[in-house]
Image (cartoon, rainbow, N blue to C red; front, top):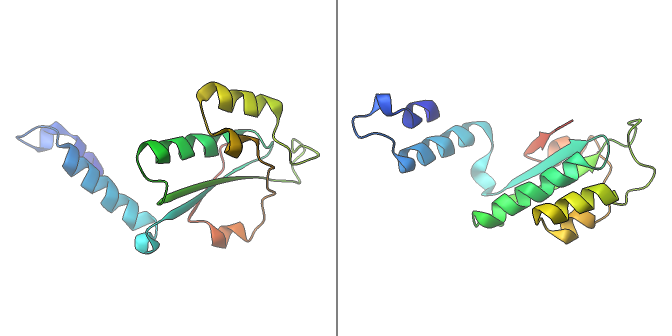
Length: 130
């Protein structure tokens, strides 16, 4: 398991990064369907703010790890939420945070998407940070 490969107590050789990475990949493949060789991940929030920033951060992580052809982040807002904005434009505060973090300005400033129940079938993983 992932925890066993991380614990040096289970090995005379100490920590093995490659064993840890293999264990993480195996653990992930048991949870997500890796048969398509990519993962579509959607962050759903209730204010068109947190999901947008999380999407930008995951996009940066994918870029840094040369995984832009494997991990496809997206974000959506629950339109019926009382905190949902009236329009789908990116909040100025979210764009400012994205710029401060050095995230993709195009991704962070594009128009938002309303969450739809069909997303449950379209995405491999849906994360609600709020």
